[in-house]
Image (tube, rainbow, N blue to C red; front, side, top):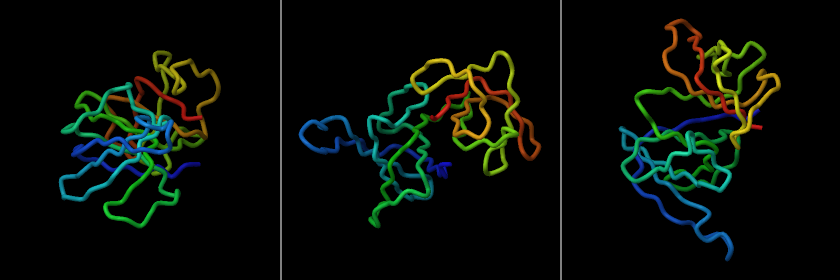
Length: 161
């Protein structure tokens, strides 16, 4: 189970990171600054999943998710390997978390109610046809209840295998 931690802010720079002679252009370093002035550098690998496959540019508001249990170098600003990047949009909410056998996120803040119209796919876009419980999921949803946990019927769920 991955311990997904998020950092939300505005992209201040995007730079290529050279890793080996064949890695040229395949790795990026995205600097993000939040409204409090805190900064994080996200190391973006070819395996980093961008929700909706959106292109991120300087000035965009994004949320990056990384594994809070993964080792990180003790440098400033902190640098984390991005697992998922979301370009923030007012018409959608995104939650990246482990969901238990009741489809409740590990932080207890969101419960999923599936419908026949919920699109459930793998990161490569192919349909996922197995049980969703006890998995790491990217959940894209709209309105939710004000209860704790909030309940929602997601538009789309991406399964992180």
